[in-house]
Length: 87
Image (tube, one colour):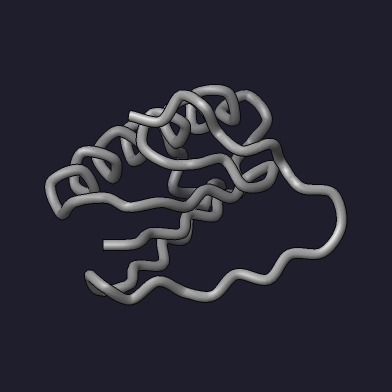
Protein backbone atom coordinates (compact mmCIF):
# COMPACT_ATOMS: atom_id res chain seq x y z
CA UNK A 1 0.00 0.00 0.00
CA UNK A 2 1.08 3.58 -0.57
CA UNK A 3 1.69 5.52 2.65
CA UNK A 4 2.14 9.21 3.48
CA UNK A 5 3.43 10.02 6.97
CA UNK A 6 3.37 13.45 8.62
CA UNK A 7 4.72 13.96 12.12
CA UNK A 8 5.05 16.72 14.70
CA UNK A 9 7.25 15.86 17.67
CA UNK A 10 9.28 17.60 20.35
CA UNK A 11 12.79 18.59 19.24
CA UNK A 12 14.48 15.97 21.41
CA UNK A 13 12.52 13.16 19.71
CA UNK A 14 12.86 14.43 16.12
CA UNK A 15 16.14 12.61 15.35
CA UNK A 16 14.77 9.21 16.44
CA UNK A 17 11.53 9.65 14.47
CA UNK A 18 13.45 10.94 11.44
CA UNK A 19 15.80 7.92 11.46
CA UNK A 20 12.90 5.51 11.81
CA UNK A 21 10.95 7.12 8.96
CA UNK A 22 14.03 7.08 6.71
CA UNK A 23 14.38 3.33 7.26
CA UNK A 24 10.98 2.71 5.69
CA UNK A 25 10.02 5.65 3.44
CA UNK A 26 11.22 8.45 1.12
CA UNK A 27 11.92 11.80 2.79
CA UNK A 28 9.76 14.38 0.98
CA UNK A 29 9.87 17.40 3.30
CA UNK A 30 11.05 18.13 6.83
CA UNK A 31 8.50 15.94 8.58
CA UNK A 32 6.80 14.31 5.59
CA UNK A 33 7.59 10.87 4.18
CA UNK A 34 5.96 8.69 1.53
CA UNK A 35 6.37 5.34 -0.16
CA UNK A 36 5.19 1.76 -0.57
CA UNK A 37 4.88 -0.48 2.50
CA UNK A 38 3.51 -3.95 2.93
CA UNK A 39 1.03 -4.46 5.79
CA UNK A 40 3.82 -6.15 7.80
CA UNK A 41 6.22 -3.26 7.18
CA UNK A 42 3.52 -0.79 8.22
CA UNK A 43 3.02 -2.68 11.51
CA UNK A 44 6.79 -2.71 12.18
CA UNK A 45 6.99 0.99 11.33
CA UNK A 46 4.04 1.78 13.62
CA UNK A 47 5.61 -0.17 16.50
CA UNK A 48 9.00 1.52 16.07
CA UNK A 49 7.52 5.02 15.90
CA UNK A 50 5.06 4.44 18.75
CA UNK A 51 7.90 3.40 21.05
CA UNK A 52 9.59 6.78 20.51
CA UNK A 53 6.54 9.05 20.85
CA UNK A 54 5.24 10.92 23.86
CA UNK A 55 1.52 10.55 23.17
CA UNK A 56 0.68 13.50 25.43
CA UNK A 57 2.60 15.89 23.14
CA UNK A 58 3.70 14.29 19.84
CA UNK A 59 1.50 13.40 16.90
CA UNK A 60 1.87 11.37 13.74
CA UNK A 61 -0.60 11.06 10.89
CA UNK A 62 -0.41 8.12 8.47
CA UNK A 63 -2.45 8.24 5.27
CA UNK A 64 -2.78 4.86 3.58
CA UNK A 65 -3.95 4.14 0.06
CA UNK A 66 -5.03 0.69 -1.13
CA UNK A 67 -2.78 -1.28 -3.49
CA UNK A 68 -2.84 0.14 -6.99
CA UNK A 69 -4.04 3.56 -5.84
CA UNK A 70 -1.25 6.12 -5.92
CA UNK A 71 -2.20 9.69 -5.11
CA UNK A 72 -1.26 12.45 -7.49
CA UNK A 73 1.29 14.75 -5.88
CA UNK A 74 1.70 18.37 -6.87
CA UNK A 75 4.69 20.30 -5.51
CA UNK A 76 5.73 23.92 -5.76
CA UNK A 77 9.05 25.48 -4.75
CA UNK A 78 12.25 23.85 -3.58
CA UNK A 79 12.11 20.09 -3.20
CA UNK A 80 14.18 17.48 -1.42
CA UNK A 81 16.68 15.60 -3.63
CA UNK A 82 15.54 12.21 -4.89
CA UNK A 83 16.48 9.40 -2.48
CA UNK A 84 19.33 7.10 -3.42
CA UNK A 85 19.40 4.63 -0.54
CA UNK A 86 15.93 3.09 -0.51
CA UNK A 87 15.48 -0.41 0.87
